[in-house]
Length: 221
Image 1: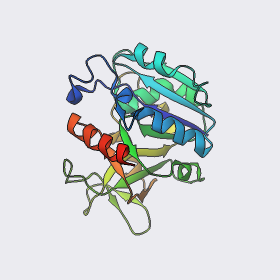
Image 2: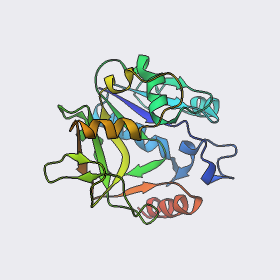
Image 3: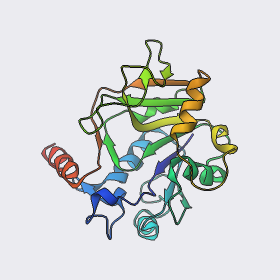
């Protein structure tokens, strides 16, 4: 099974840190954020990775290379101008192939066990959800007692930026910029989306202050 790490964003909220450094290369605990994902996916048994790049993409690709020093092959989907999540996945489909793949945002940190994404599932969408953080109190989606995902139902949890997807969901999308949320909502409307609630550590590194907090946590460990 392959995995895709999303790493093409501008990181505007992290400026000036991201003026010359791609957001996934920002460090916490002495390691780049994206390196935690690469190592976790490798250790879980994923066969290879696809990483998309946009802002400062050459810098990102030069830093990580072909994955040989991490022990897992990395293929690159260079976007130039970021295409949003679904558009980036659409662009990367030739690298991802026809089998379901795992997806993870490059600018989060979590202790979620990514080997759970290797579990065979019938649904074309499976999302990992977390408790709503202070900066996103309204949440995103409802998770039923039977692990089904619903839109416009309370209470809601927050999408963690981690999931498993069937590439067929994106095959019919036009080339260019496209958001992920409409794709998810269409799957939920067909009762074709499942989910799980991760109750462990999860950090959305959206501000320099949150990066500093995570750095302190990981350094203390």
